[in-house]
Image (cartoon, rainbow, N blue to C red; front, side):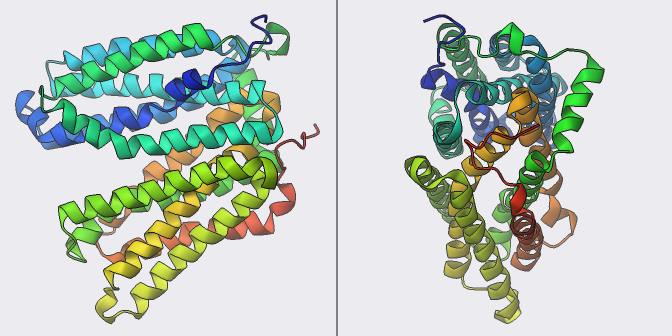
Length: 405
């Protein structure tokens, strides 16, 4: 089989697209010791995560369009190598500010690998087969946040915070080897598009003015905005406003994450028979119903303190819906943007991530870490996402229905 027709191996795709959560969450438990070890402030240590997230978004937005002009394989290999080298530099970092800079570069490398890896899927697979593969990638990507804290805790029993970055360097080596061995070039020269900033901008404008692509991306931005309110605020809200213990919150978050992983596996099992559009419809109904229940239960409860069991059930239903939603919407958006699959991957991944980053600190920024504040900040974007998906559904293409120019 020639490189032009060779299919990428699933394990390699999982490695290059699924390690971002490990890079974000693995060393959270070590942050207090990092502060004293580096003789820096807690704010600087926390900013190492912010810098990684910013780099992650930037890496996606830049690399996807570039890969449409230069091909996928070399960019993925370069990103994996940079990730590995910078992970070593993070392990050796002598100061907090330098670690912040290194984390931003590490995030850009991880974002590049993820965005271009998704484009490889679009290059090589079609229709519901592509949607099923997005379901598999999504399941593994969602499992990583569940496993990352446990992996970090295990590593910290045999070393300090630096051992976490040595572990990430080892992951980077595995990514590089997997990409070199099992990810052939998926975009031959005759299928590439002209380079240069002007042409990159034209491709992005072409996609963003095409409602078949822009609508699912808009729905994704609104959905991720609501989800990141939960990610950024639920720890403070549930512990401070409802009195949940730290261990109780960990259990709640883990159960909800498992619900998300489970429904993403269900998506993988059903999508070839049912189709991504119908599964996304179910997902939107689940997550919108969940946040409306949370909002109404909070408004109607005495002192706006609903029973914990109701809050937990609503959040579990929401995350379960998201496990169906993310792979379905990714498949729909990538199919609509297939003509520029690298740019499509960048926009459909980077723009929602930026919208989520803006809403992550929202409950704290409003000065009220309460269930009421969190539920309001969640119900607005989720309901807007549902209304957008419903009113503009004529623009939604089932993967396998090729968009016409």
